[in-house]
Image 1 (tube, rainbow, N blue to C red):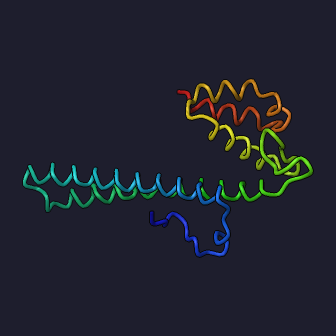
Image 2: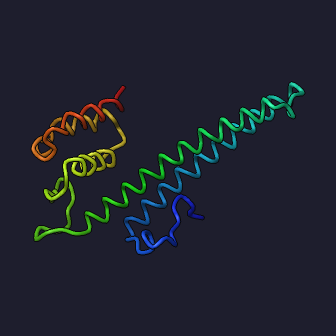
Image 3: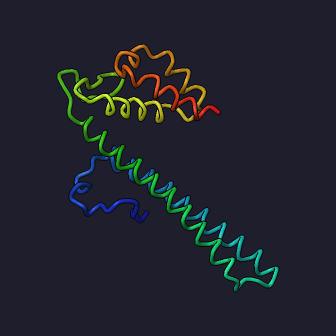
Length: 164
């Protein structure tokens, strides 16, 4: 698999751990799926316009540009999420006497409130793919209430949006 979601020769990404490399591979797989879906949509447009004798029309070019822009937007979101995950994974590599920082086993109280929010959010987004189960687990998490403080409700609303 060719990895081009991030530049692995960049010094910031040169010494990734195996867990971080698996995150990169997962993000690359998502990116490849977005690109493949984009190419399929472009083919559909081409064949549709070809059947109507308008394949060389500017409309096709505009439609393909729109598809490319949407695909790049999705890829950018995947890339930003990956960079965020790598950042928090590297922060979790350090720890205390209880081991490496990981929510909920060993939460890092030295993090700022927004960083705690992201750590808990990443935990719940990775624990299950079922949005309703994820929200139910979060509402039963008493540690999250104390750990997040004012951000508890914000994360609740964020997770609730996936249920809809």
